[in-house]
Image 1 (tube, protein in one colour):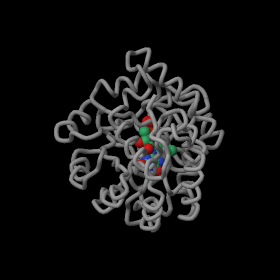
Image 2 (tube, helix red, strand yellow; image 1 turned 135 degrees about the horizontal axis):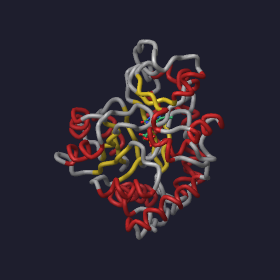
Image 3 (tube, rainbow, N blue to C red; image 1 turned 90 degrees about the vertical axis):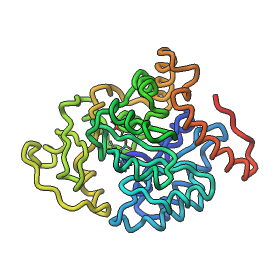
Image 4 (cartoon, rainbow, N blue to C red; image 1 turned 60 degrees about the vertical axis):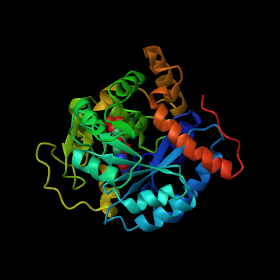
Length: 317
Ligand SMILES: Cc1cc2nc3c(=O)[nH]c(=O)nc-3n(C[C@H](O)[C@H](O)[C@H](O)COP(=O)(O)O)c2cc1C
């Protein structure tokens, strides 16, 4: 998540057996991004889950070519692309055995990403944090499954193990959690941002293009604190990835799932809780079961990389 996920969150999440990801743009420069990749690689253990990086594929992201080169150099196991699905990116990541999952909010984007060779489609449904879509997850997952037999990831308002198990039942292979992880000890979010999430309910989320140029979900109290009237927001400008940080520092994004977030655990505690809740609902026997197909695929890619480097093959608990 933009301005929220950094190495601590990724490392602790992966150590707890869940794939942790961060956007390359969370570091100010490509050199800084590379330093984070090195730190994550150094501190992960052989039995940690693989990690991933989000690349914004948009003409206003001037860092994209350099960031992609560093991603390939460090053989990032999972690359999550958003805003543009590009065959060249897929080929670059496949060249070292990595996987590409692409964010989609409608069927047209989903078909384009599938044609570009994406290994997984992330259905960013109504109520998700960040640049969310509006589609109902039951409808969207079924539509994607109708033509796509690779990995489907469900995103939007998933905060607990019961919901991860439900995502699996409705046809997704993986669940993608954002907002729940803002309120963790390791997240880079301001303490007041975390508290605002704890205090908020779904009705406090405003879906607007005014802040970012494309529709995204934001916390109503943060709009007010920034001097904006949520009922009378300014017209949207053009999206410009280079200018996003200023807006997102002041106005805080979160999804409808805020109502289910009531504490600030460590990532390890949160992942343990997710796993045991899933297990209680028959989605065990291990935390990875609901995410098994993609987890295994991602792990296979990571194992291949580890074998190449002489690390022992990892086992999945
Ligand atoms: C503060 C925030 C920042 C986000 N930044 C990004 C981002 O930079 N790139 C991206 O692909 N998705 C981003 N997302 C979306 C998440 O990756 C994920 O799809 C979404 O948060 C899932 O929905 P949930 O928040 O309801 O769990 C962001 C979400 C939030 C809440």
